[in-house]
Amino acid sequence: MLKIRNLEAGYGNLRVLKRISMHVDPGEIVTIIGANGAGKTTLLHSIAGLLRISAGEVLFKGRELRKTAPEKIVGLGCSLVPEGRQVFATMTVYDNLILGGYVQYKKDKQAVSRELENIYELFPVLRTRADQLAGTLSGGEQQMLAMGRALMARPSLVMMDEPSTGLAPLIVRDIFRIISQLREAGNTVLLVEQNAKAALRIADRGYVLETGKIILQGPAADLLENRDVQRAYLGREKIE
Amino acid sequence: MNSTLFCQYLFAGLTYGIIYAIVAIGFNIIYNTTGIINFAQGEFVMLGGMIAISLHAHMPLLPAIVLAVLLTMAIGGLIEIFFIRWLQSPSVLRMIIITIGLSILTREAALHIWGSSVRSLPYFIGNEITSIKVFSSRVSPQVFLVVGVCSVMVAALSLFFKYSSLGREMRACAANRRAAILCGINPRNMVTLSFMLSAGIGAVAGCVMSPITYSQYDMGPSLAIKGFTVAILGGLGNSMAAVAAGLLLGIIESFSISVLPLAFQDAIATSILLLILFVRPHGLFGSSAAARLKDF
Image (cartoon, rainbow over all chains, first blue to last red; front, side):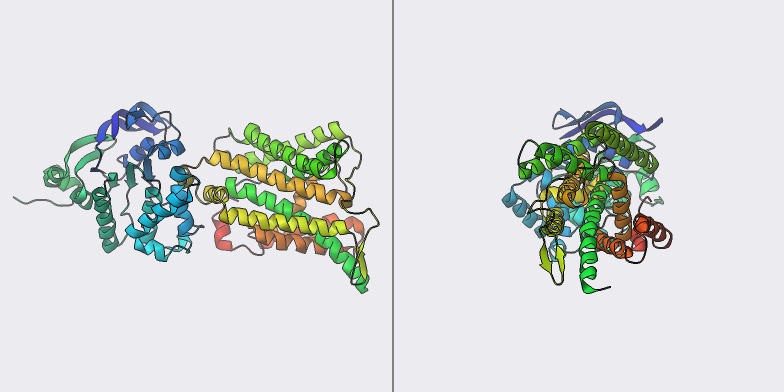
């Protein structure tokens, strides 16, 4: 699905990502964990085309994304749920969702309403809030809206940037439950999280990013058991 | 003041007011999608009128106006493509200077093409002396045309932004540019479209007002100042408030003639602009919380 080889990217002279190589296979949840400033968001932005890649390659379904404009990448089936939700605050929930489906359906109204129904099924709260301005929703609801908006495009790969940031623990559990539901429905998810424990619990595989390099990778269950990961990211010091 | 005079002032005020509102909405459309103020907005009104007058020499009135509006829209789009599009996140000051430069450029080009003479389109219905009796005063049908056409335009625009998918995409770019990109929308195209749209409505206003107010190559800047005053007065970015503010300014101006010498008429808009910028920079109808989030 997604294959990245020796990717380098940064801002101006600042090189943030150093020779990143990773891959995501269809139907799996892959998580990237790491501390603040490790380059997790930068990595997602360079895949989504929001940031210019300085070296290396990003292959999505065998297609090189390096020269593709971000709005075209969405059309290819690679959607990003950005950090901090980024909903259209001054527009209604309904409008937000319709805009998400725009890239896939253009003017096909029937397909849009069919997809809208699917999204409402997945996030019932959005149906009851349909006519409300997105900016008036709670943090959790906004996150669901941002996810729903991205899913409206029926992406083959959904990338999520810190979906749990700033949410109450109970809501975080809901969000992660929905992400694992997405896999059951056949979606592929690339999940970037600071909440490493929760992310590794639902993921199939994981990568650990530190100062722009991948320092560890493997099945999520193994990473959960890894002593270094536990010490650095899970806040647990095992006493033997 | 007797009732006849009152009605005359009122209708004159409404006519000018709705034109100011249209110019202000032109400002708002571009401001909403780009965050910049296009000071060449008044030039679109001038171009619409002038092109229609030239075309009318060769064809009937309606096709001349339609063609003039389309041409002005094309010019608006080209201006954006050549002068604005390639700028990477320009500063507000730079944009202001560029649009003022464009305004001067357009005006000088118009002077070169049409000369400095005052022109006008013929009255659409009847002639200069045709009038309709309203209460005790007589009003030209053209006045109703101006007010009618502009009101229809305002209504159509708000429906367009609210319900059409293109309007929704333009609003999305205004609300959150990056998120719009992530929905597969190309914001650059939306910006071009917003220039075309505001050029188009400016041109329509320029055509319908031409028989009453005449058209001249240098009518743009004063309209732009009035329109800008109205846009600020209503609260930048809010089109319905711009209509209310436009009518307010138009009526204030026209009634001022009865107490102040005519020469002071233009000073009124500027005084209101300064007053509002000092006292209520977020406008009469805008919220100060929203204004604080804006760049300027």
